[in-house]
Length: 575
Image 1 (spheres, rainbow, N blue to C red):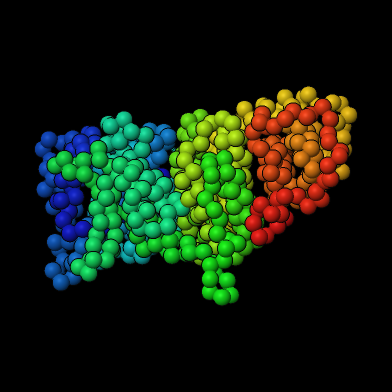
Image 2: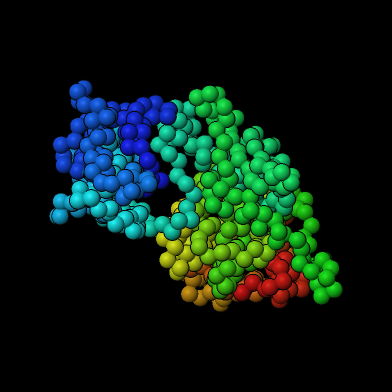
């Protein structure tokens, strides 16, 4: 249940005309009264003898009874109360009871004293009501509306529990604006999954992902088919922007534009510029760009995905133990990676990845201000994903997609845990929702590459599998029996064999992988180890491209006691 207090107004009759009218897009159906201050107010919706003016006069009667100088400048109070689409349909009586509790909670009415304001609740749709009130009490005094928004939100949480409605988490004012009922009905009529506001927010976020300049940002929006209107100062400086979808038109057939700041608090031009201002490569002691941190552009989708997985792992380490401002930056940049991954994914994972990015968007904002600059690696990873082009759903591209989704799952899970610790209820819930979409996307992406590894593992000789199991029991004794019982054990055994044939020490690789967080909470520990080992050992994610030497392990090549991961995962060794 979402109660929303709208801006106060001056004209009672004007709001009544809207509430009882057809709506801006003909979405108001059967407008009628469900409750009022005395349960006896005229209803212009169902009583042919009642008029809007009759109801307006009664509502404003206490206002007209006081001196002009004592009247509030804006006397019209307006509250809408909306249920979620999946909530059960409530009766008029139930909505009437909700209205009475809301005005009592807000301080509009005080049934016990009988000296509240006059109000009326109008229903013109199945899922919500509007409450209009005049801000002068029957005794001539003005109501105490301090913290009225917080009080109606608290009442909504109680009503959700009592009526079996969808339970919402307490907000903190950082959420993006929800589509209005008119916007949602319009989208339904047009056969769209999302309202224009949400579709534009997704387009803008995708254009921002990894972008480093205004020109690049606006070029990407144009390439996506979005209409842009820029606000320019007399000096020529760009002050802001608005965007519209070509097919979203008003009654005059003009595009409906939305300012970036109204799409989401972090999509205003000044907030986006903060991301760009921190994208310059760090400098060394001589004031020159440090060449060790300047990453070359990837040569293809598979390379970009490997690099993104490495950057995601480093971000997990920061989220685990970094300062709050640094963590907030990593989580915000993680949203860019998901946006970039969704727009470059293959068809069989695209829908779920898009939903994951859409859900995680809420988790990227809180009142903790992100310290930009420390998120450079993730932003570069998002940029690499975009410019490496779309990935095929097979071969190395498909396998590295599974590898990246696996790491993204742990990155998003880490974000959820951090938000839980900070009591960011909405953000934590959004991150957990994103993990569910990532879980489904991972299963689709991993099915083929893990199937190849499974068959290779099944072909291993019995002594060789016993050897790999011994490595497992020695390095992760608390998880070994669980892993050996998983179907993915065969894929892990094949990966250990591939690593040993490539000159690595399987025990050293396992030890390093086992020290990493979240291992024992994974759905399939063997799957997680497969991708971690293949990435850190530099093995192809698509094992079908490798020679099948699974019948025996090479013992002639020297083993590396220090895995390649130390060089491939950046300046800080993974712990």
